[in-house]
Amino acid sequence: MIRTRVGYAGGTTPDPTYRNIGDHSETVQVDYDPDVISYEQLLDVFWKNHDPFSGSFSRQYAAILFFHGPMQKKAATDYAARLGIAKGRSVLTEIIPFREFFMAEDYHQKYYLKGNRAIYDEFQTIYPEEEDLVGSTAAARVNGYLGGNGTHEQMEKELPLFGLSYVAQNVLRRLLPWSSPVD
Image (cartoon, rainbow, N blue to C red):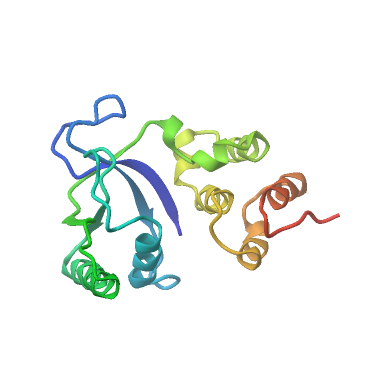
């Protein structure tokens, strides 16, 4: 993952906000390097991390996959079809073209990271502007690890690249069930 940001998409309401979302849905924008992870691998994560067979109870929380171009559309619809056949159920997740993304308010960004002041404060020192912190690959990766994604091996390999102090690195290790602090 290069960057993740939360926001709103899929509707027509101009300049949506959390308090005035209109006909948009809450979403996550993912920037990735296709030389590191394929679109198909991202689809695998997407489909495994929500219930594609449940209908959405509101537009704000609708299950939607936004595609960019015909190749992504085909890959997404093919995956949904295979999933539906395998489970013998209709996939209710919408697959629609991406039009525009609106960033959510700062307090919605990097949810797991903000839940740990020691690590978040270090990132704020590295990235004093909120926009830079939200756009940081390091912050996105740590937020993902704090959210329970990734492996111990991946984190240990990347940890020296995040710019965190030894103390903050050990705080991160202590928080993850598959890791332990270094003495």
